Image (cartoon, rainbow, N blue to C red; front, side, top):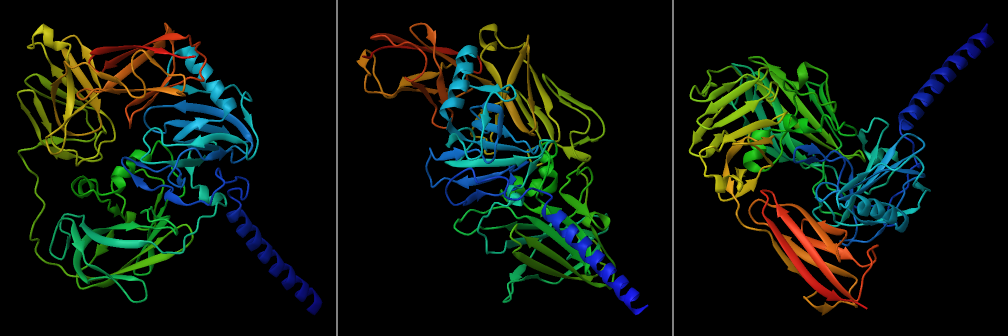
Length: 572
């Protein structure tokens, strides 16, 4: 019996240990380790982390520093085939997508150029379609790549703010994942910083320190590295928000954190995990942050409670959507734990006294504003301007300012985020016929000193634009032709020693819409760098160059004004 009992106990212990081992292994092997290699042959130093908070979206990859320069060799992170190539003057600039046998896709963006084989494939398509901006989906296996094969060179194309490589890993549903989960090693020994804490009274009779609206709460870092706020007096349903960043070793950039946990009296309240999201939900970052505060202060408060119509999958509620219920004469503690991917943590403790008191500043609705019911379609019209707002454009019912004075629409301000686009329409039938073709709808800058072109459609006497920004809009007029200037050559000059031709194009009012360039009547590829406003033609391209050549460039702005540039050049 003793032996049987011993064997039974041994078997149970072994099974439990085995199950724990399998569970641990499964947790570690949810994502393949050491399958993907670094796309660069330098140490990984990041200027941007995964799911970092950006304008209207979460950052979908890692921004890898390239030593402040362009042209570093970029390698396939694993074997596979090129599934997509996209070149745009905005966004990712020149981007390459590689599909791998394990179902994942890696993305390489802001590239300067592709490897010779891929570059030739792309240019052939560009010349066939006669366009610089292009999106290609090569046939399966047309562009196979092996592990660590040269595929491109780093750059600064598209919406990049400086030379770097944007690198992503996506799953088979095209959801971006944190590449650090796949075994990439980035040095980080410093815990995140918690800069500021804010309190939010939520229910009708709630308050924090007698205030019924957002309130800043003093925070002090303790000698042990933790943070502690001042003791607050509160009542009713309240929530909190923080401003927090993480800094990696070897870089001064302010990066995003990896996860945030909150506890109320020792019990889990909310968990925020920044390791995966979908592109369909990324716009809802504007519901996660305090968008009104960001509009005014350019700082992002992360709200640690889930508001109505916030579908973000990164949020997990354990209790009441992270909202606390503070009762009178109670004493409680709220804790926030902020972590980076390496597990470095910072803790913030908030002591709370439950104190009921009469509201000093009760919430009131402004009856002079236009009420918008989020669940209903709304049409606003005054004089010759109308606004069409689809249902569920706003996250909740709101009061907004709607005013029309002459040709200017004041549609509140951009402090309220929108889920969908709205349509703004101007009736221009009262304008003289010779001016109508030069009109466009523009968004007035916050300081009122600049007019930004908003993509304008013309339907007879009606101009319309679709936008996701509230604010002030008016009619602009653009009768100026774009400017075109040669940069590295002159008319009737010899260019035998030049590798390329560079031309600057500029339109200060409505902006450049398109351009077309030819040499001796044959279309040529001129790459457009919107940051420098340069068009560049490379002499290595397919066009036959004669001794005497005629370069012709036609540039059109967004209202249709056109300029033509012609120049002779000589080349041996």
